[in-house]
Image (cartoon, rainbow, N blue to C red; front, side, top):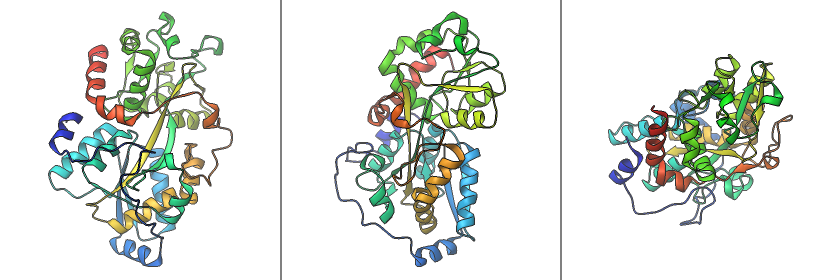
Length: 350
């Protein structure tokens, strides 16, 4: 399902901006996590969580929530963000009420879903107070669950530090031909977002040249870290940086490269759907994930950068502010997603 056709088919009147946009109407009054809400959530007994986050993080997070609130089971449904977007569109079009909470690595999805009126605004007092303005929709329709980067990385057993790339343009060197692996923007929201940023920074001619480097093409941004850890390829062009770091902390021979041109930065918003079959459990899950406890859990397990200002980044990881990053533009991604997929497929033949 192409995004532009989908948007046209279910278009609504409002044109909305991404995180940090101007306020079109007031955010909802914050809702506290009360004993009554917890009891109502326990009566529902479950919550379905759609996410693009790797299962190595999503499943432990779900277990931690279940331990916090016994009697509520979290059904984690993990897939690539672009497939997640199409799946939700198809379910809504077929009047299938399954998703309670969705988390995507393509922030543009939330522009579309909010425009359609599909999202249920929700903030707790903690979220209202401790999420900076650029980490939440001004009307409370969605919040940024976490931030990661799409970084270059390499296997130190296959590439010497002095031979490692310093940035994206370096990857065009013939010596790297047949040694690269990368994700696909037609499957991964991380790669969709990163592709838009890099095309703007370096031009589409960069991808045309990169496609001639005998690149191993995979789908998810979670795959390049696993391929270079296994030694299948020496260098990852892109991928979710938290998985590179997690592998390195396990002792894998991996080094992360923050490109001299700038590294793509990826927001990962989360929202409750109005048609959620388990609305109370959905509120409880979102409230917990965005609380200091939930945010600290994500940081501890994966080292992704937290949105809640009460939570510090993981010790040993570079501070986000210290890294040169490329600017995010979810509105531009939303407008050009189909073009990005088409041009990418033209160059990489996949």
